[in-house]
Image (cartoon, rainbow, N blue to C red; front, side, top):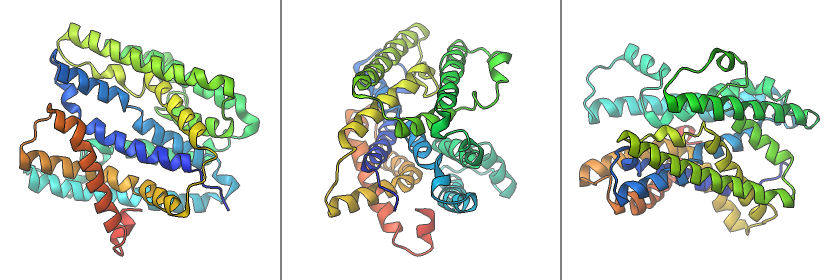
Length: 343
């Protein structure tokens, strides 16, 4: 039986919470030189590691799938758990947008056009990275073997250089990526570095003497992104949120330290049977929380006229959204047929 790594459950749970904090602190996008804006930016940067952690967990769990089952079984497991919910919830969100936001231009052709361009629900951008990754796993898994350790590091290093530094610099300057890097196969596939990093850190945990460098890297990444965001936003008179993109040098190193810290603290932890059950349930609710939490945010904001810049909205409200999302997800998981949309 495959060993269950409870630190990954914990990472999954806190990353899900972090996503909600990101989506309830979007006041950061409205620049103003005030304390509230500053706090919103701090929250944004402090939790920007959420989706990279999801990518790293996927890489750690899936890039060695050949050790457990064949490729056909892999696709059956993965696509059933993600592709079906993605399509179903895209349709649900499409209908919701029509009736709730009165989007009158709708129909089958319009639905598929928006679906293929990722324009039905903004937070679903995650699916447009994870699903293509699943299709690539059968050949990526041929690279990610312990014997190919140096090759994996090579890919990660080029990802950091190409995406995290060169691509990031072009993004901040609002200039097109140069032809050399844009035409580099595999390396410039946005997100590949996170998937490989998750696999690598799981297979080759850093030595005790190295862990402090991961922690330092995360702290410096946070301070770098915070300082540059405040400076560039002040200069431009608008929030330059591209500074703290996950596809930046800081966005890459920040989640690494969090992964290493949580793993180091919980790797040998054996929770009680009751605690283990709850960790599994809460971790298993992450996808459900991801697809429904924006319903709660939209409805609550419009019903109770919540101010995006209020302290309550940025600090208290996300806990309410997370708890309610968990309750709804766990309830839906008990209903036949519907539970296929909440795997």
